[in-house]
Image (cartoon, rainbow, N blue to C red; front, top):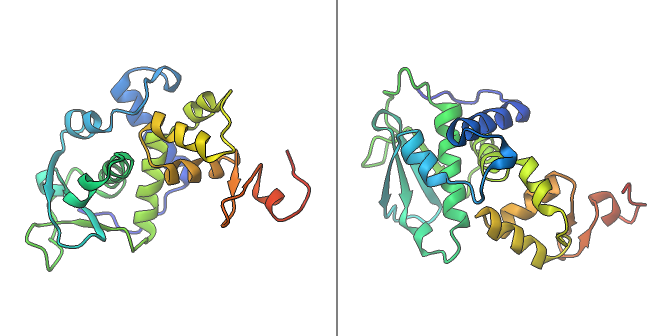
Length: 209
């Protein structure tokens, strides 16, 4: 059964992501070697199958078939030279599996219009409540706060070069890393690409830092 539109406090999502990391690595977050082994967590630890398919639509990034324990990824992800988007999509699907699938009763009515019995379809141009929560889970899984703070020390993250270095280390896209750093109030990048210590500072007000 698919659990739709369930309210999750962000802290609850973060806790679930950290619990998954602890279960897989058997160690504290600080002892985890980067990047996060999302493929092994997906396929070996959770036992989910991974298939690649041409969805004939670049906006559809992936689909989840709960009863088959299968994640189907759009082949368009393989065309990116940077694996960050692929890794985030895989972590996003793990988020759906953890947050939105009742694993005691995985059989569900398939979504209409698809050749496979998808229970969840993920599109890059649509963000409902469930998609937002799956994105949050992916962020917490691939970029744990403790590891972000630890690896940001001694690195000039208030520059694109610094963000690119962090993104490469964590196996995510530079855009995903920028958003993570902004959410942690470590940096803010305005629409013109200018860097500030905070969003408050970008508005011309005195920085709180």
